[in-house]
Image 1 (cartoon, rainbow, N blue to C red):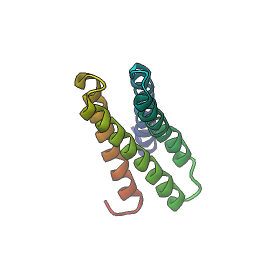
Image 2 (cartoon, rainbow, N blue to C red; image 1 turned 180 degrees about the horizontal axis):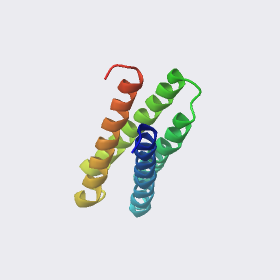
Image 3 (tube, rainbow, N blue to C red; image 1 turned 90 degrees about the horizontal axis):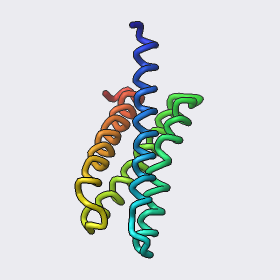
Image 4 (cartoon, rainbow, N blue to C red; image 1 turned 180 degrees about the vertical axis):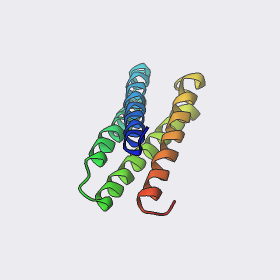
Length: 125
């Protein structure tokens, strides 16, 4: 397999993971209790949890390396915010831990992948 195909497969895989992450966030928020606190947390999590995929797509169409790293930085920022809200949900016990923990793990992995991609793009790997 040539290098271009390997890169495309990695991009496609990450795109799919970000889409799946967004879908899992949507499904989780949909199960939150209908309280004012849950609505607030849910709204914050919907915004931060669905934007990484869209921002990643923008990064893939970046016009320069600096534009690419800037857009990836936004992806990382949104993933970190999602991690925060997931941790709040986890600690409050609003949702069963078995429902939150796999999503938190995926968020951690996505953060690590994007952080490494930023360093690689900046030439600091």
